[in-house]
Image 1 (tube, one colour):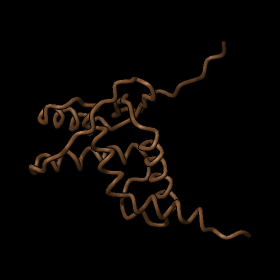
Image 2 (cartoon, one colour):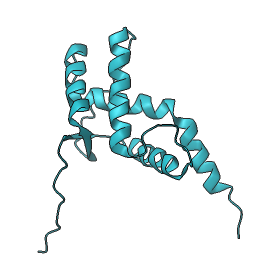
Image 3 (cartoon, helix red, strand yellow):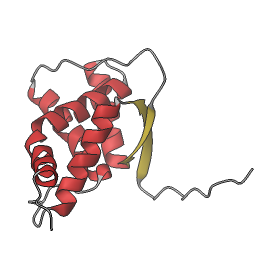
Length: 137
């Protein structure tokens, strides 16, 4: 059987493997595509690595401020596991914040991504509407 070549991980990154819903993964991809196609992203991260890092930082900051957060629980089935690459700094932040909140690391990251996608849903809608209502040439 022919084996596929796998790229070596970049220095300063860590891999998180967790179960994400297909809708959440799709929303992350759409958000990344919307920011890549926008002429000015306003300093927001365009790639999924940056989006995940920013989502982790936002949730960790919210917990430090004392905001109450309802965490998204881990699904029972192990189907649909997704590997996400994050920076090593964001990984340390997620570990410390999840320990402080007394939740699993996977629950913390899943919650951070869910909150981030919900708060940036307008960017995703702009991309979808633009593609849907585009005229024929």
